[in-house]
Amino acid sequence: MTGSYSLLVADLVGVAVFAASGAGAAVAKRLDVFGVAFVGFVAALGGGILRDLVIGAAPPLAFSDWRYAVTAVAASLAVFRFHPQLNRLRRGVLLLDAAGLGLFTVTGTVKALHAGVPPVGACLVGMLTGIGGGVARDLLTAEIPAVLQRDIYAVVALGGAVAVTVLSWLGVADPVTLVAAAAGMTAVRLLALYRRWSAPLAVP
Amino acid sequence: MTGSYSLLVADLVGVAVFAASGAGAAVAKRLDVFGVAFVGFVAALGGGILRDLVIGAAPPLAFSDWRYAVTAVAASLAVFRFHPQLNRLRRGVLLLDAAGLGLFTVTGTVKALHAGVPPVGACLVGMLTGIGGGVARDLLTAEIPAVLQRDIYAVVALGGAVAVTVLSWLGVADPVTLVAAAAGMTAVRLLALYRRWSAPLAVP
Amino acid sequence: MTGSYSLLVADLVGVAVFAASGAGAAVAKRLDVFGVAFVGFVAALGGGILRDLVIGAAPPLAFSDWRYAVTAVAASLAVFRFHPQLNRLRRGVLLLDAAGLGLFTVTGTVKALHAGVPPVGACLVGMLTGIGGGVARDLLTAEIPAVLQRDIYAVVALGGAVAVTVLSWLGVADPVTLVAAAAGMTAVRLLALYRRWSAPLAVP
Image (cartoon, rainbow over all chains, first blue to last red; front, side):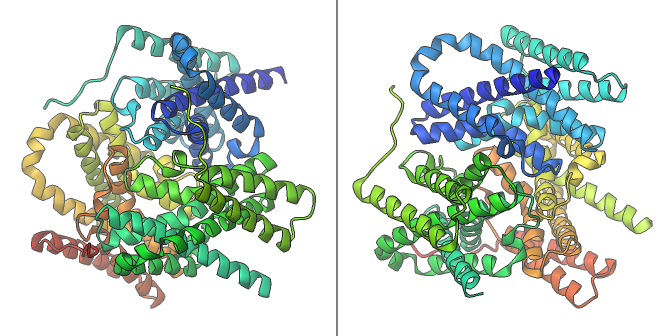
């Protein structure tokens, strides 16, 4: 009971953070208040919608539990209203974004495994749950998706999804190890930001 | 019998109008005749395909009833052939587009409620049915979706979806009130165009 | 046994070729190694994922059979590593790409018919299976999809899908005629490239 309640709270924090990242990109593109809410919604819930369509869970959670949509829209509107002040909070947002990445990847992988998706597929579903919202955000604002070019964001998602799949295969995917996996991904993501790690480009 | 036949005719009129909007955008981007048909198809049927995937109705209506695809492609080819003359009809197209927006949003919301999607989710599905095709059209032609920046198009869709959900909750969502809801959305949309209403931008 | 094994091998060759086309586009856009793998994955498997979502086959084959994802990623990484040498192989890649187009369209149409999608819808699903990956590749790299503007690529896909549907309706859609259909599409595609056929534009 308390466990699933904690999971819901953590999930909604992830939704709020990803919605804020989408809303921030939309404000920068001079979209109107509705456009900001829409891009925030897609950035927060697009990864999960794709996950649920792929594992055959219709309707997706974003449509069947109102708290997800309301959280995403509320966070987007807060960014719309307060974005000048939020620029000073950028460090906090990056921390929460890294936490959201870890959390979404873990829940996506676990849900895919529970739905009977085989291991390699479950890793892909977990990764797509973690990065899907960011890709959709960038498509809507007419950018080449940042996760595909800037840094090792998506590599962290893939690594975390593999870790969760291995934990599950070993039979030790209990709440404690899953939280540890999410925390590990968050830590690696923050370290990558701090050290400016980036993936190699092709030789020209 | 007659009621469902009227609904089909109205639905296909919406498909034709949205296909024409997509085909017009594709002609402006100098796509070839196939590209024009493809963008018209996606603009007309993309919202409904997304709706059916979300509510778990596979295969989507656009693939299971041939009249939808044929109508979309025929309307697109007509625009391809006659687009210089159609510029003079722009006022009529805007009227039909507003009617299509009202109709698609109403049918999308009703179908989601019938499929057991809870109220908040059904509003979102209804709104996405109404605006989804336009978003897909703009993604395919490499534009930031117009519905996210130009005017209150999407706000009308959301408001109409909420109205239909409330009507349904009150138990009065019969054909007459649903048609009235669609007509009301059409009227608000036309008024918004005429008065140049637009949603606010964030303060810079 | 041997028949389905041949089909799997042919399918994976198609996956590898389409992944290479996506990876090549990503390298040209200066994406990092992960972005190259991701765009390759989407280009190779996006059409099939869309097909499986539309026909209600969850989870899609790209997630339920690990050989698809591994083939797509391996081909993408090979392009990332060896792309300067591959430029000299461009002629071979075009041949394989034409073969992949024929194959994907045939398998997409057959799967849709088997899933009970009516004829017109099955033609559309087959065509989308053949061209969907290329469209997704171009969306991710912020281009107007090439299949919509450059040549008759998509027309070949649609014609092939119609041919398979007719063969199936005649009751003669056995492996031999299906392979012949795929080969026919490949030949038409190559002829179109060689003769520089292109679809007409609208009169300005």
